[in-house]
Structure formats: C-alpha cells, structure tokens
Length: 324
Image (tube, rainbow, N blue to C red):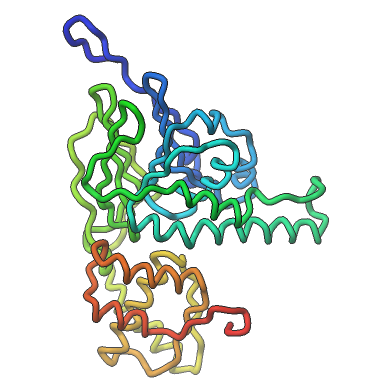
C-alpha cells in the first residue's frame, strides 16, 4: 500500500524479519526504502543447538548493504550478532542509548570470549566435524565492533539512514532499554523492544509510545498474565527457612538486570532486619561490571544515590576463579 498525494504514490517501506520468529531470540528486523536499509536489533540465536546453529547460516542480506543498526537494548539476543555482522562487511554506525553503549562494552567482549572458549572445548573433545574449530567471532572482533557504536539520547530524533528518521524512548527493561520509532516514506513503524513493568522496583516505567502506523511487539510473555506477588516477602521467607536449617541459597540470575534486582532486594531486607546477618557473594565479573554501570546511569532507574551505594555494598564480589 502507498499514500496517494497529488497524484504520486509513496510506496511503503518493506520490513524483513530475520530473527525472533518461531523463537524469542535472534531479534533482527530490516527496514528498506528507496535503496537504503537499516537493521533494528542484531541479536544472537540462543538456546537449543538447532537455534544456535542459525547463527552460522549465511546472513540473508549483504552486511555491507546495511546503512546502520539501531539497538533497542544490550541483551545478547538483541545485540550479540553485531561482531559477526561487522566482521562480514557492515561498516556503518550502531545507534543506541548511552546506557546500552555502556553495557555493550561489557557484554560483547564477554560474548566473544565465550565463543572462543566454546571453540576450544569442542576442539579438545573432538566434538565438531570442522578442523580447526573456529569461534563465531572472537573477543578482539567484538571489541572492534564497539568502535562503530554511536550513542543517542532518548527523545532526540536522528537520521539512521537517508530518509529514515529514528527516535528512542525509554522502555524500562534494563539500563538503556528503548523502544525505537522509525519514520520513513510518510509512515511510522515502532519496535517495542523488551518492555519493563510500570511498577518495577528499580527501573523507571516505560514511556508512552507516540502514535504509529505499525507496531512490532516483543511477546515472550504475550500469552499469559503475571500474578500479583510480593517478591520481597517471598524472598524473605525462602532465606529465613533455608538459613534456619544452616542451608545455603544459590540463585542463578541474569547478570544484567536480575542480578541488580536481587542485590537491591537483599539490601532492603538486611536494612529492615528481615534477613539474618550472613555473607552474600556476587560471583560474576559481568554482573559486577553491570552493577557499576547501573550506578552510572541514574536517569534510567528509581534508586537514590544512597540506595545505589547500599545495593553495591550488599554483597562481596568474586572476580576470579580463585575468589569463587
């Protein structure tokens, strides 16, 4: 469809979904119009082997033909394919919020390091048909991709490519998370990104979206309703019951987002006397770095400076295998 104005038909831009279809990872959407193309998000497929193998398939469009990438946020399922894209010929800018830029500096090199570790592991086990076993990309390639990152502020329109004007709005999911609205050919398309909760104890609520012609929504939990819960009460009960029998609580948590939620909860419980005086350890260099980034991006969250200090002091940090 197109808009007829003074006898001229303005063609609609085309959208091509290159990931996050039939699964919730590997988010990538290409927008093309009048010979220009941008990519909204550039994520890795994660999960079972069948999904991870998609990362090795030939990219369906030429990376060199992409004018720019616009990221909604830094989680690897939305950003982790960037080093591969850059290595294979993409040379344009990567637009994102300042908070996302800060997190990418931690997450992308770590992802490259893990890719190299996995290649070495498969080589030692003889578990691959390929010789030598190569990583999807290296830590060095991930670091090189960071040079293409261009931070832009929330609410300030920018030209992502000729004829494509984009605006980021705060989405409340993690530090730097944004929705992306792209105006092109007298039309607008908005990508929700991962959306946070309005009543999140740490993150500021998502901003209301501007009017849009087309809305592309992340829908990992779109088929269910979250039950209202008192998370602090539940955590306090679990901790108290476990410590009463001299037990240890081990919580696997996403290093970016969930780990900071847990640290804040522990700090609140300890301060209010609802948790016993026991040692707390944060055993993740990435989570430690992400916590510092949280403090540096005060505009994205609800915590006061004092609450940030208390959150950071809630645990002892394990940075090395020896510490662990």
